Image (cartoon, rainbow, N blue to C red):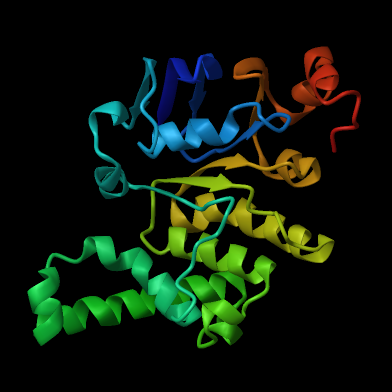
Length: 253
């Protein structure tokens, strides 16, 4: 589904991504891991078209992503969650999720104001879809709470839900477990495993929680200082000497 080939990105002479190549299989859960500053989030930002690389290719489902504008990426079935969550605090949880369906609207601002039947139909469909995702995430009980009242862990789950509402083909997750307690992480692990089958969505995940990453992924790509240092199954990566060195001997999983 996704092929990254010889990707290079620099900031002020420092290479955040250095000749990186790897692929993501359709229907898989692939993890992109590495120490802080390895360049992982920069990779997601290139795929999302927030950053323009100096060289390389990003081919998604036969489409050259680097030829698209950022706003066109979601129309090709790619959504993402963010490490630093940005919700609309004055809106409810349900309303924040409904925003995930807004890109599908073809009505325009004027019709949104006068609210003809097409707008009502789109809003009902978005509400129904958002409610289904909230139930899947197990947080339907907070649907009508203002987002500004949520704890950080709850905000992360709402951010994940908003990314799922458009029914993406490819979902990019940046630190989905950050801010969750251990019981929530175990629960999130189960949710992530279910997403490919229940949503038809391929996952590319960044996270520092190795228990979660190695527990859900079929393939793990490891970066250090912008370069790929390992690529394989969780078992292969866990035993790779270069990976152990990059993590300063920290036990993985």
